[in-house]
Length: 493
Ligand code: AHR
Image (cartoon, rainbow, N blue to C red; front, side, top):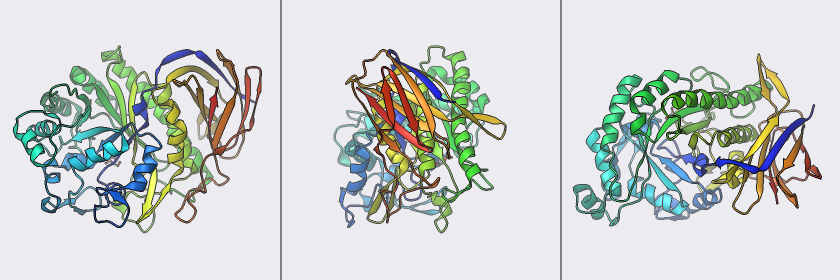
């Protein structure tokens, strides 16, 4: 059978929020230290301590928003430890992640400097689990108050005269787990209290994000929306794609059996059901869809690479990860009426990274290339698309072979992203392109022969996008042969 789609290019369905293409950087393993931050005295080329190669690579994928400092780390982070002269900053133990020394050399000033370099919006996550209302309130004052106040004065003593602009602020992280093991009722009360003191100073208007559910904890969503919707702008959701079991064996990042490819794809698709069910609960309290669903942690999570610190969550990244990214982003685009932000975990050297580093060396992962291919969707108008895909069975469940997303950019181009999740078979797809005069179509493809094809420091370009021409246009009917295990981006002018 042939997969079929209809695209009505003249029917738009709102804007795809660019923040869906957001990222997450935690004080975990080698994400911040070694990944972003090497310090001013490093031999690795840097600007004020931040790696130049990493900044250059990330600017190319146009990171719209960056979440920091955690994750679980956020609920034991005390921001005052990370300001002032670096040599005087407190050293602490990062108890969640590897029990290593955290020297606090990367703190608030360094984070905002990084965001400036990346031209990205900061998203700061505050500490509810082990912090106080005063501590959170003072952090917001330190960052955003323009005038005479104890925290603004302290910021100025530390060399920053003007406040920073800060929109996104999270009130805790995973408060059902590492953020305090709370019941939703208890967290809702705490959320309401803490957020009261997350002030809007002057023109700075904070978008408050409440700690949301874990995976399919629908009760959490219901309680939070019932008790706190009027005090929040966003509710977070965390979901990781794990082929195996979290505690007993997640599965290997490379050299995995065929059935683990299929299960991984199936688990990636599961985010659609989660979005729809959580969103339905949110609709009950917020039919206008004012409150955004903020998927601020998502991505693959495999067993750590052998020989690395188990608390560092370092894993390789293959063409399978690329497909998980492509499928997930197509789903987020499709639900962009509710999904206002998503932050893949994590940017460098941790879980489903964009970049891996080894001292002065740096490689781009297959996932990086997907974000680069999909950046055309950022803030573009979503276009009506209906797809009927072939399905295949994984266990008892059917799953589509092909997923797609389409949007129209400001330049008038229609951009289509496609995934063929089938590890063995080409997918034939016919698209009926309506509402557009087709002059020219260009394409790129990311694919590989091996299921676990990846880039290494010795072979950094093993998996990278190349030109794609395996399509024919006949009038307005576009016939495409999608290779197995492929992500394809087409631009119709
Ligand atoms: O991304 C790694 C960890 O996963 C985060 O710290 C936590 O929020 C989640 O459980």
